[in-house]
Amino acid sequence: MKITPGLKVHGFILAAVFLTGFGFGTSASAQYYRSYLIDLNSKTATDIGSLSGGLTEAHGINDAGQVVGWSRTAEGSHHAFITGPNGVGLRDLGTLRGPLSQAHGINDAGQVAGYSLTTGGDYHAFITGPNGMGMRDLGTLGGTGSIDTSSANGLNAAGQVVGYSWTTGGAYHAFITGANGMGMRDLGAVGANDINNAGQVVGQSGSHASLTGPNGMGMRDLGTLGGAFSQALGINDTGQVVGESYLAGDTLSHAFITGPDGMGMKDLGTLGGFNSEAFGINNVGQVVGLAETAEGVAHAFITGPGGRGMMDLNSPVDVPGGVILAQATDINDAGQVIALAIPEPEISALFLAGLVLIGFTSRRKKMSVRP
Picture 1 (cartoon, rainbow, N blue to C red):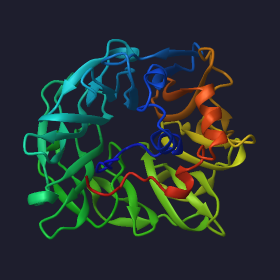
Picture 2 (spheres, rainbow, N blue to C red; picture 1 turned 180 degrees about the vertical axis):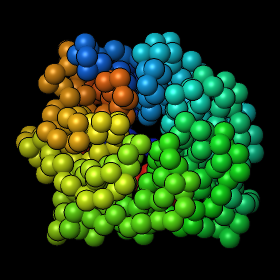
Picture 3 (tube, rainbow, N blue to C red; picture 1 turned 120 degrees about the vertical axis):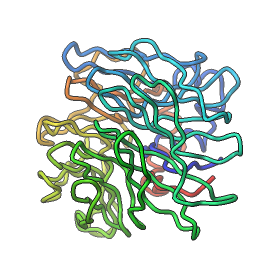
């Protein structure tokens, strides 16, 4: 399997699906491995559709309910997509003239950021104009030859984009741009997974979660929940940060939330199992992610404001029969969540194969090896 740069998929479910041949391996599972828009107000789950009737993976949502991610095309490739408001009407965003693209973030103007293969076979970060119109190549931090690679993970209201790029010296560094994706700036050997409207960037420096000041300036170690490793995956406009951290002993990994400006890392717990991971947070501090149940199966979770009270997202929502919401990847301020759904038979097969929690041991993080 080719691992792409800046892959904004963290969940252990996906690792297990790839390794067992589910999802991409069979036409049956391709009909079910889909993404849903969950409306917490109406407690409904709506399939956002696909480009070809096959796989769709949603990564980001804005306050209008426009969703972005990737979907499998009829030719078997992946193309970035955007939907209309409330997840309706999935549209292909195309590519940078290569065969593949993925979208990772969207702001309220509908500008989209992600990565695409170019005609030269390189992965490059991109940004679009409002409503996903006009994909533009952001280039790299000077990478050349076989390592001319970059990827965008998120963007804010001003269109400042963050992600990863190879440098002239062959190192893998985080970057931030100016407004509307102009002027890529090297943030050094740190991770860059998300950005808020003040320009604070979260990610990873060394083996710890990190947070910068406004406009990506300065970097602070956020520590851990007692273990040796942590990473920050999301941030809201008050500077509350979410992600995952090892606990003392480095055998368990739990989702965390911080207070404003990244102060005070707090353990969010699990759904009765051993491990959890947080991916997104809105401006009232509701957190979404995935957590292990007492049965050892991954379920999507949501918390109340301020990260209080982790709850299984399958419980309050009218989920289609036979489908499990396995991970929630983002949440907006309107009470809408995007979640990945997998059929219960495949969840059971993964569990029996001992692969349901594979991501907690393989550490499929955003900053992955180049293609």
